[in-house]
Image (cartoon, rainbow, N blue to C red; front, side, top):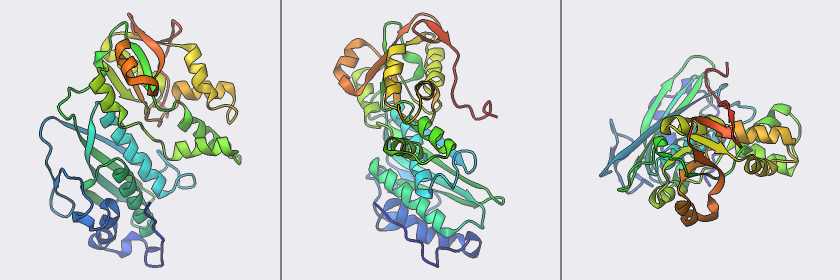
Length: 337
């Protein structure tokens, strides 16, 4: 793990440095020893340092992007710069995995108030480098910009490859498919509930808070499910109900979730939160980045226990729980207002 120890030279606002000064310290953290030219993925022909990167990526290319805004997507008193970096990387790479793809590179943008400390930027860069290397990919380049007072906005555009496979879309689910999840449900939302409560967590609660600060995603299971024959897939970024509704709408079917399966998932969050809160976290909790997929039974048998069945695809529309239609609830950037 990279460690950035802020010395006096790093406890300087960005306004006291040039863009070149900042990049000279930031780039080595993104891709490891050698900076712009070292530690890069084998597909990278030209990395950071030129006007644009060059990536050798024959065949279809996956592209996705996500942005995080300080005060909207994280709070500095709850999340370190390294936490923000880890979350930003995983939310992008989970989108690649949900298409059945493998990540090939990241483009990073930072727009920051010039009064922010260089130390925060370097800690953020170290976190980006750590998370990208853990996912066997690298930073291709990006952009660094100033922003109005109090503003910090960070963004990643991720590229990926399908390695000869067809993409797994939201629109492929068919009646008779199973609905299965790989990864956790509700842990990030439960951690957020504990942070909002402001109480000292016990060991179980600390695990949930850690899951909120740095969610993980079963990235390798996306391409594995694609190879096995999953018919539809999405990463759970805005809540199980809302993201399941997106598959249902795109596929023209109904996803009928099992109440008993939901309650089993909720039990993993108790007693850190109450039964009622746990169930709501499972159904509506965002920033989980687990994978939700629809698949024939034979595909589930091949994938095995890593994928837990939580429902089935039936004729109809929307999402239901034991046959009772449930409105899509979860995170929405604008309805949340």
